[in-house]
Image 1 (cartoon, helix red, strand yellow):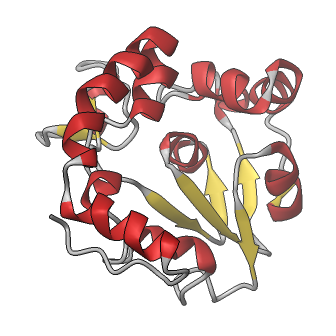
Image 2 (cartoon, rainbow, N blue to C red):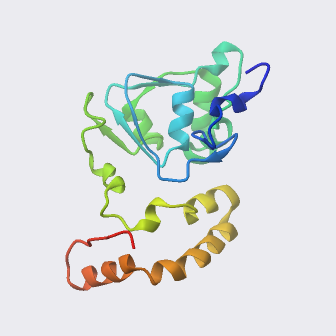
Length: 188
């Protein structure tokens, strides 16, 4: 890294899981964390769409104690997602915290018993084929808005909405709503 810079985190891949040095992963990222989730693990969690944590996970942003700085996005994502004071608390002290605190501050969205992070919690439903095709394709208005502001989100919605509303999935979604049943999306 000292010789080639932090973009070496991506290797030769097109997408950067941290979403900092190259294009971010274009599909929803659901991350499961357990054990010790230090430094880059926290930065991956901040870049993920949904984070599920084992109840015994230990988080710690260690760079300050190693004489380096976070380079996977924590310096700008933590203040935006966790609030300034909370971000500074962990970025400047390297204080360790657990799953309950991570849930309270918004770093994770769900805490499950240890050993169960990959056994099908409710939030994994986003990966289900029962979701409409647009939910798993870029560009998401939420990502556009987060990165470039409300105008970019509005432009993204305006470009996506006509195609979505003409899709079979949208027709099925409306039909299932009026029939009071679960939608059966086909990806068309």
